[in-house]
Amino acid sequence: MRNKILTLLIYFFLNHSVIADSQIKPIIEGNINAKVKILVYESLTCSHCANFHKDVYPKLKDEFLDKGLVSIEFRNFPLDIAALNASKLAHCKNDGKSNILHFLYLKQEEWIQGNNVEKLNSNLKEVIKDQNFSLDFDHCIADKNIEDHILEDRIEGAKKFKINATPTIIINDKKFEKTLNFKNLKKAIEKLI
Image (tube, rainbow, N blue to C red; front, side, top):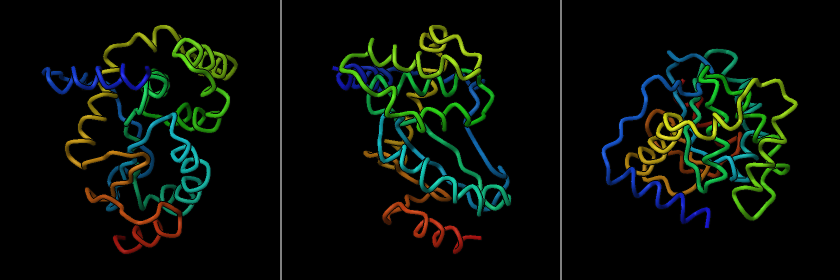
């Protein structure tokens, strides 16, 4: 059911002219002027994406992002309604920071349980409740500008990079085709620095 609803939303946006609110800030870390720019198309309900945030991202941050050698932009590619709603929370403060995004991946197993959108939303609301994120959950979930921004990311990823799975890594506008682990990613980055 969740996938059908998301498919209908994407179909609507593909067949209607939508202009995403340019005021929605992308979530970017590192030196935005770095020679190496990474895009990560991901879905907050994707376990492989959560593993990327837990296993690969910290090493990438230590060796490249914190040194200003690379920038990384987290792009939205929601695979279902739960991922769409979680992405809305990640963007809701519109500050371009990644702390909510990383938190949601870290706690993914806690909120992803349930077989309907109401239960998943309830889990999301519960998991962020005590985190001092200063979010109005209902406002975030209902925000059409954020929703448009998220769906535009997904549409652009599918059209421009032929993305059909998450996570998908794009390095300097080229799809990273090797197995996604830090060793392979490091080799690819070092060739470009």
